[in-house]
Image (cartoon, rainbow, N blue to C red; front, side, top):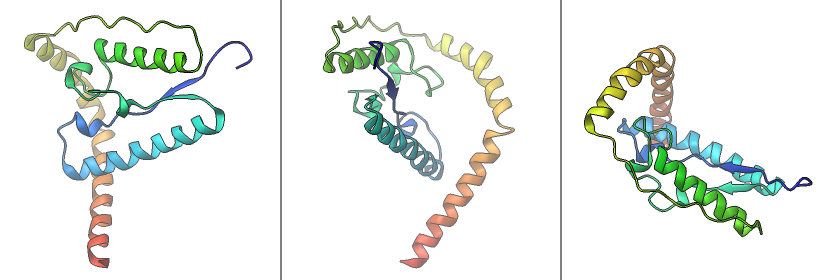
Length: 153
């Protein structure tokens, strides 16, 4: 870039590696996440943007790297992403030191339960109005698709 900057993008991880959800919903999620990642790949290639491929990060789907919601990186996961980003910048000639990864602070089971009750339950109740019906519709659509594939074989 003209001003000594670099554009970076981070592909989506595979949430199916972290979530306990029905197989049918996993198929829906996999297809959608892969589609988004394919677009990221194309944009990064066309615009010469740094692309962090989260699925290539060793042990990326280890639950200790993720927030209790299993959708967002936790403190340790953010450190891993920062290291990947620094490494990618160093690979492009930037004079940058890799960040030191600090030891993992483990939350107690009690802390996790408190977070789920305080934050997870309200989120789930709020999202069950829009997210749950959408997920059910997408799973029904996927089931129709799977059935059509079986019939046409």
